[in-house]
Length: 324
Image (tube, rainbow, N blue to C red; front, top):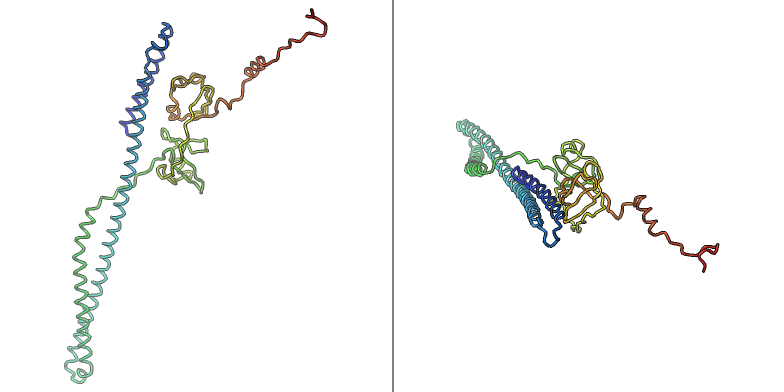
């Protein structure tokens, strides 16, 4: 998320908290004045607009990340094309050097044969025996020299064009490090786990309680296995709305009980957080620990239930009291 988006989102948080305070004061004032429910002033539309604006900002941030991934992919393709072209230029240069070396050897052999032929001109007997063969070999070597010279000239003509193509390629940049995101999969000695929390520079892996910086996990042997964008999408389950009595656990390991849920806002029993939406709590690292239906009853609740369900004995005693 860019600094501008982060500042804007922080501003939204401040406005939202202030709006929650104003809503609370407005409800208290309307309660004191006994204003009927239908005639009360409600700021819920304004609160909904702020929440919608925050969601839109998160969506925009996701689009920015997607664009960055596409840009990185395009840079990778350009780098591959550049490497391929550079390899082709190097191969042509090596071939040109080899042809030049072979050409020099052929020229040296031709010069040696020409010197030998000049020496044999003074010997008529040797001229009759070897002259025709040597002359034919010289002619053949001269043909090879001409062919190699033509090939060298062709390769030299290609060098400026290949150099121009290489200059047009983008300059090499250092690979961008990937910051682990929620949903990424990391691996260590064959064990694959997904990133469950990535907030404020700290990362927690699914199934592990400890949190740490990404660099700490990497020093421990964990490496990126697959980005969240590459993980096959699974059917999204219908979100569970937290209810009164549910237990919620934070990153610090402390368990809080929800004692109020009004208009999409939640309050904790210990009053550590009040009037906050479920998605905001989840973003801050809170997770459902146990549903209200799974929480065992307290001794007081058991006693109250027993008192209500205890049968009443209306039968007449054996001593005859109550008989007419």
